[in-house]
Image 1: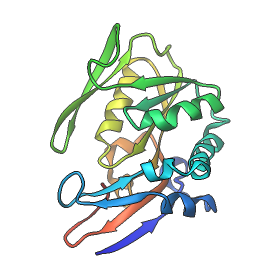
Image 2 (image 1 turned 60 degrees about the vertical axis):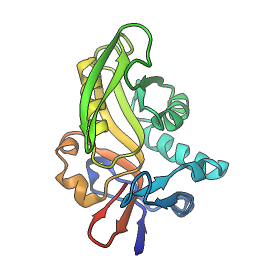
Image 3 (image 1 turned 180 degrees about the vertical axis):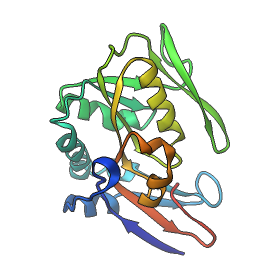
Image 4 (image 1 turned 90 degrees about the vertical axis):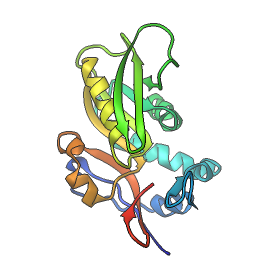
Length: 206
């Protein structure tokens, strides 16, 4: 099995790159676990990155550098690993943080958005009143693979009256998948890096 690791910071409209010396340490700190959680899946484990404070800080700093001047009113983090990156980014850019949670995790009145996964269905919820009309929102998560969860998050924010400025993740779709994904035709995806794995019968990311 051959493993190819590529690092990219995707520019607005998914058409440029930023070379940054921090990327090598970031990509090398992410562990790849074969056949987890099921045979054939190459799982990208970010917990090894979190054990390295400098690398973790580099990730947060790269997000902050991108969004500091973009007038972001709110950072919406997708459960669960979006909660790792979202709050420190929100604090640094002086935006509020909004958790997008799985069903029955938030008390009080919520709005929900269902979505389809490869092997089932799921749902995201957010508090009613968390957003005001026309507030500018950054959605953040750790991975974007198929885009299903991120798509649900976009719909949820838009239904609440917010404007999704961009979606951000640590590990994103390879560029060829980004270009063909309907989700990212109107809203761009900024990823610090993406991983491509050459498997015996397929090309993909976990």
